[in-house]
Length: 293
Image (cartoon, rainbow, N blue to C red; front, side, top):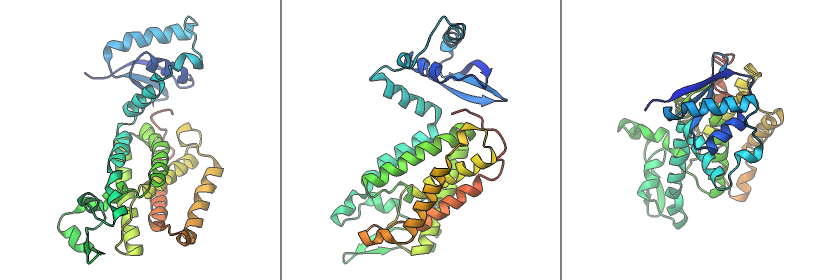
């Protein structure tokens, strides 16, 4: 059943409380910007009239909404989750795949290589007399294993590694998908993944590396550049202190100080991911995003 758009209203109306109220009522919807106006789209067309009625009641004062009216205890996290999946299906899918793939690296804690982790690495790896042996990249690509250019982004080696990358991906990925759409986000993730993974391989040679960090920094770079080119749009607004912190952290990690504690960072993937994302943010930066946050 196709979605319907029961409301098209002025862009300066704050719909945060109203949208939260719709989710409380169980009305799946999303809001995006089109030709300078906000569009409310519902998944179930049969709920369109209810949305119009509730909106009219809210705007005329017959319905008064407060923060407490939009919070329903246990239902609130579920409503947020449903809202996230409905508004950002590509990002939600990426997060789901990342979480599902996390157990792939657990075998490494026991000095073993599961078939799962071998399938996700940049090139295939086997154990020969207890030491890792990596396949040749040219041979790997010639044999059609092109997925390996991307799949290392789904390898995470600790809970902290997974949580940090997931948090950054969600925060900045949602901005991209809401502003430019799911296909653009997916294309961007693939481009950054290939560039950052290849850069890390060429920088350090064959090895066990992975994680969404390169993509995360790429999305940060994209949003920051878009924010410089379209500072009036809330989707692209990022504080200057955050940008300084990100660059400062990258510089610190690049000094090799973490290796003193046995922590090896894929710095090439981070820097290349950041630069590729920033470059992708340059074209069309002055065009308005299609959706408000």
